[in-house]
Structures are given as structure tokens and as C-alpha cells.
Image 1 (cartoon, rainbow, N blue to C red):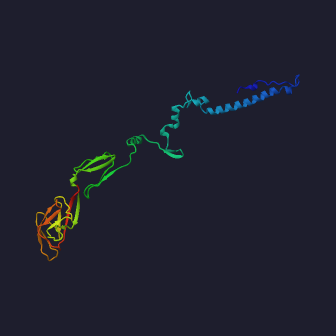
Image 2 (cartoon, rainbow, N blue to C red):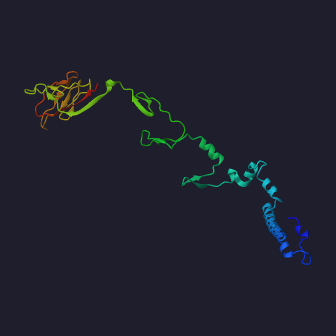
Image 3 (tube, one colour):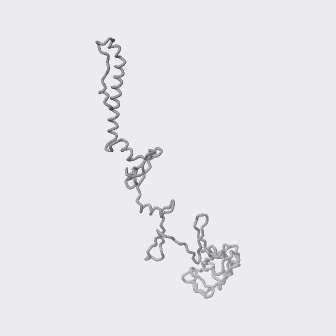
Length: 268
């Protein structure tokens, strides 16, 4: 503030031919206002000086971070530890919910870039054949699914499916431990039999005949024990007829002998 106190105050004096007290009222108000303005300017100057800090002036201080247009200087922002290297892990409330943020190193970011979007951890372990074999685990790289002699692989709407390469004629049903039916149930000859009451056909070469626990052969005679420990052994073979669903023994057995058969039924 200029030193306006050096300008003398002008008042009418008591000995002057005026009424000094009343006539000086306008000047008194002017001087009082001048004192208020002077005090305010002194206070503002003090605040401005304090705002300059160690920069010398407020302008110098503002010039440290602002351009002439008033925008932030990039260098000033980086110097204020805006660089990610100066940051720490933290959290922030977004829509009332805490969200965690972490600082990431460059090698961590490079590693993350190698991971496919929405990828999850997956490992496959195969138990190989044999009790002493070491299990094989695949947890990296590409795992190929190669076709074999009997299995082929295909992708069906995102699902991996395995198809067998067996012909449809190989599909069959196993029938075990069935008591065959005499070809003539009312007067059985214990030689000719049907697989079932309706003579169910079976696949060629699948019929297996057992008498008293001994399996017979189509080509070689097998000695079969009788129904009791004291019974004699009988040499027996059998002749199958797969299409007719029947078979015939080479020698008649008795009603006390136990006869059972196994066979396969074609499904197509």
C-alpha cells in the first residue's frame, strides 16, 4: 500500500471562520474509509506474500504447474508422483461398493497378456496302463486328441465327442446262464434244444453250452460228468444253428443233468 499517511490531513481549524466540527464531517468519513481500505489492502498483501511461498511471487508459484492457458503441465503432474511407479495398492468406493486396485509390474502385465480372455485353470491327468506306470499330467501347451483304430473325435456344438469306428453289425447283447428249452417240450429227447421258447437267433460262433458245469466244444468231444458223483462220464459235442436259434447235442443227456447256455444277440 502506498504511504498515503505522508499526505497531511486537511481539517478546518477552530479559529477559522467556520463551524469546524460539522463542516469536517465529510472529510472525517473519507479518512475513515481510507483507513479501512488501507487495512484491507495490507491484509491482502500479507496473504499474497504468504501464498508465494518460496517461489518469490504467486505468479512464479503458479507457473510451476500451470501453462499460460491455465491447463496442468504434464511434467508437473509427473513430478507430483502421478507416475504409476509411485502408486500403491488401494481401494475406492464406486457406487457404494469397494473396488480394489493394484499396481502391476511390466513383466506381470506381459505374462497376463499371454492368457486368453476368461481363461481358467485346467489340467488333465491320465493314468497309464500298468501298476508301476507314472501318471501323465498335461498342464501346459496343446493336448492333441488323435484318432485311433477304433475311436474318432469330433466337435459337436462346442462339445468334444468320441465316435467308435466299430461297424453297426458288431453291436450285440450278451445273454448268460440261460436254461435252454427242449425242441419238443412235451416229449423232450434231451438232444435237440432251442435257446428260448421262441427260438431266439444268436450271432454265429457265440453259443456256449455247459452241462453239469463243463463247457462243450463244437469240434472236439468233451467228457462230461453225470448228475451224481457215481455217474459215468459221457463224451459229448454239440452242433449250433444260429439263424434258427437252436442246437443239438451229439449224445442225449438225462432230465437230471444241468444244462445252461450263453449266447449273443445281434442288435441290428
